[in-house]
Length: 342
Image 1: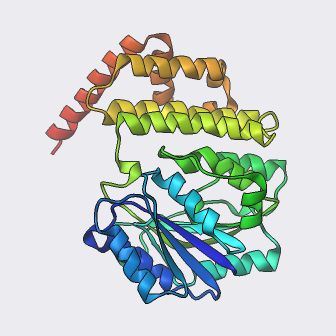
Image 2: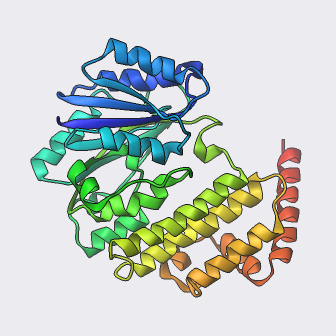
């Protein structure tokens, strides 16, 4: 079999979201492929919808049910263990793709001998094939046989896994199973999926539609999700050590960890959690220092981090209490100014 498309599904029955995703998959123009949709213990009608598609498309659609909620990583692992395709593709169950996306990605792989092929996506707030704001997912300079320079670039700007296909033999050879029971599983394993490939190809065109709505992972902030993002950062470093590329790409991994574990988590926690806890913020800053004591001297941190963020991070590293008081006053002032500007 040429391709296995794995779809983790959890409570996507409302508003036709799941059907719109699945309709784009059953219409793919590539020949000899399978869709493995894994229901991650949904409490709505998602499983019934998947069963309906399985009955309608028995030659290409398989509905699988997990009795335990394992989060997306666990659902992906279930799908990968059942997959038979030479290539693996992942898609979020509230997104959709062009009818020829997988045909074009696999064709590029076969023509070039790549282990990994990706494209761009566009952001959309409506269920249609009308292109939204295009988000370039990679760079043309990253294409080709992967040398050290390309691998460094992929650590810093690897893009999303859902707009790519991966050679299944590479996944199995290196045991690239996702962490279960946490969010941000792609962040934990992303570098391994990219750096263990020998050859990457990139089609500079948006063929994936990334649906924007309030319940998606990136728009939902909670203490649990912040803790999961920190855990994903720890696992990212452990993966680099397991596969032997930590020292070779230490500066890039240090910055990626700083961004994932600390910067993104710190500011989303402070802005999105109703009652931020002093102990949580202090422990985060302490672990950041323990893991990479000189992270603020990293060249990518100096180049890519906004000046105001650097100021706030320096403040948090010196005094968590002062930082939290200052941030609260700053946040309150900005909300007041925005309200009075209308």
